[in-house]
Image (cartoon, rainbow, N blue to C red; front, side, top):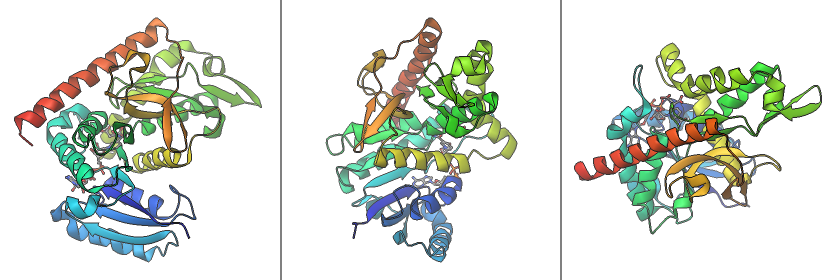
Length: 336
Ligand code: NAD
Ligand code: LMR
């Protein structure tokens, strides 16, 4: 019998939490033969809600759910975990940028970085969903240094990746399975660069590059990019709440692929610590195209950029450097 995986979800009493736990518990993420011990963390004020989520998970009668527990302290949450979905953080409201959350949320990730170092397995893999996701992941990785390698920390840009796939499929009258290899470069923010230069679309049995399939360069360099960049804000405007169902699904896609690997000939977008590839400063948590094999991601190498792409990548890099500096200052100032 396969040993259970111990999986932590923080912010499990929140919106994303409610959509994500069922997918982890029912085998969608780690497979139908892989038992899971689910640990749900939230703040003490949410302990009743958390208990309700535990009851519902029990009532789902899932063969893959080995156990589920609700906790409101870091030590029992982080002890012995294999995977951490770090979702718990304040979401933005209408009119805010994600980086406006930095001061409120960065302290959570400093504390959780330390808790990961102290209690989690050194092999633990981490996805940060809470915004500003890239910079929160940078801070968590920094405070877990020496115990958990930086390469085990990632931030979620898979939602942006999925949004880009969906927009291409809609524009070309195809379905998601016909579109592949879009890339999200940089920050999970309005400066991200959704890039279709290496994407392909299969239509009527023919696979072509996305530019030929769309036949409208102005669309791909204008409205397409803006739609993906601004989608989170538009959803907040419409729902008065930030995306949750699609965010939960994307987080599960991210960890599923990290666990099982990417398909041959395909890459996905994942924000990971830069190793200097493409001139991105070392250590920034930057979204790159990656392939994954045996639980290890690799940044796709050798892609070329035109001046348009270079300008977009420079802008998102600059924003991430500024966020990093602000976050480090916030950690020092608050002495947290
Ligand atoms: P929510 O407010 O519904 O839930 C957040 C939960 O986190 C709450 O239950 C809260 O009590 C809990 N929490 C706060 N501090 C915590 C702590 N220190 N430890 C544990 N739990 C804590 O918010 P949501 O809609 O679920 O969104 C969660 C985060 O995810 C937000 O920051 C949001 O902006 C972000 N988000 C990111 C993406 C992405 O693509 N990266 C997509 C959607 C949402
Ligand atoms: C999203 O992209 O939907 C989330 O990051 C929520 C937000 O603030 O946009």
